[in-house]
Length: 208
Image (cartoon, rainbow, N blue to C red; front, side, top):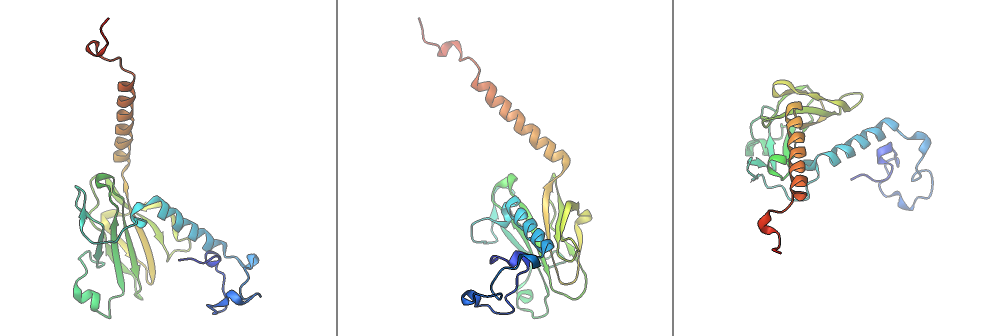
């Protein structure tokens, strides 16, 4: 949750109860605004709007949804294996990977959020992408510009997590699949429009 000014780097000098301070401690100094941080916050908001998997309004259960059997959440280790009870209770684990999928069957949205708190870079193995889709890296907090534009395709399902960083990877339709989906959409729309303007059969016309 962001309070007004957080996206600009505002500080209250460590005072978390400054609502009664009508002075510089609680004022918003626009001259000190961190424009790069504001741009990053805007990129995160845009990513959340673009991907339903990041904003589904439901409890995560880990159960499959739809005909593709995608789980709404998969908790994974960086090597791609599921997190075990020992992993959850270990004090040495420094990386948490969540593969999230929205509802919608074949139209489901799918992303991976990787939080790496270790002091060294670490390889990440992503889930197998769906047919007609590929993984793309869109956020990497270790970069000077964390929002990656355009999104970078991830080859061979492997990605390097930088030390103490957060990455967002999203599943996007490949060019061929996207073109086919658009063609199918236009074809379906044309058929529906055509049927709406087709004359009724003779048997359906009133007799004279």
